[in-house]
Image (cartoon, rainbow, N blue to C red):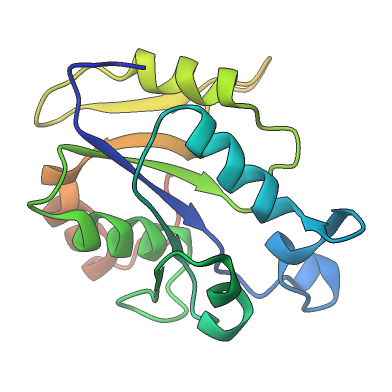
Length: 164
């Protein structure tokens, strides 16, 4: 892991789950008794990131995992609002935050470490995961916590997505 960076993690578990009939995506079971989010939380810990939160408006669904559940500051404002909530939660406590969506059953600690190692420390720094032919996965990202103001400004301007 990038030893020069004080980093925490935030799992984005918002959204309406419309493609899944309204079900909470992170609570889908991979095997009996083991959900996607449980596996992801274990992979984050295995990657050496000590502090993790779940960003979700549904604290009841995710509180059973024993880590803080932080709601969006702006309910219903899309994935960028989840990033805003995570950055706000860790403001002043860590240099950067690793963000991962809750519905990544194949994510491994090795991939998480690669993303963290790719993060170029600095006030304007962002590291984006690159997945095959895609230019980048905007919700698998490390963001410097000083970018909170820029994220909030984008939301104030009506942006809801992490990329345009």
